Length: 314
Image 1 (cartoon, rainbow, N blue to C red):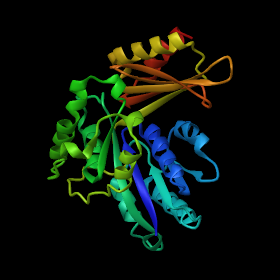
Image 2 (image 1 turned 45 degrees about the vertical axis):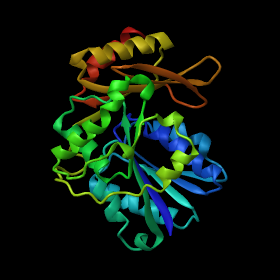
Image 3 (image 1 turned 60 degrees about the vertical axis):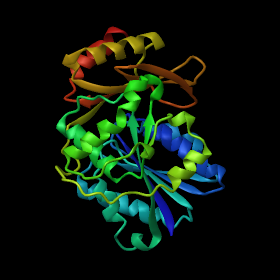
């Protein structure tokens, strides 16, 4: 049977960055892996970030989103059947930032998937600088993902204080209590050193961490939550202008409740800069491929107001 792992986390939490390093670990072990991306945005940024993994030992697949629950379930199942016949040693699934955990477990009980796959690890990625004043919907998503996780990986530690990082376990456990889940996550279930500090012995543990069949109060079906992502395509900004626009959108409450802003800018040499911004700060890194876009993630977003800030600096 093929082991299948699920990597969950908020929109913009750093799932794809973690997934890339996790996949590289399996490739170093000589494994043949398949990665299944599920994204419902205007452009699948995550697939662009993973393109350099594609090769002899890694293939990328995608489920196009933006559909109703039954259509999505059917597409997910069909894609897993196809991937089950490819001879992979491991399949890694990265869903969108808002995901019905039951869908993953239920589909793997269906014929013939129940004979082809066994669940390996469920890993939840949590932003160290996560917004603490979450809405009820956002808190539910966070808790439902963490409830089933074998381990929690803390991301973006470079953009958070030691106090913020140390407070994540209690914050997660409060969210679990909020959905009437009896599970209490001990400190040993958290990898707090950051995604880029993980080494092979850490990945060994993550690859075998399993999952928890936690019981909790289900509040809604997928697609009924308040999360949004607004895409601003072909953004023609300098590095400084992008940073300033992101800062102003974060600070302007009339833009909505903004959790994170990410995006790409093209440099003169054809390479790209990747941006990740929270209220705690902004990080910039160079990548080979991308697309000029700014993505704002949050709740009750005001596109017109945000666009005015982008245009001001264009």
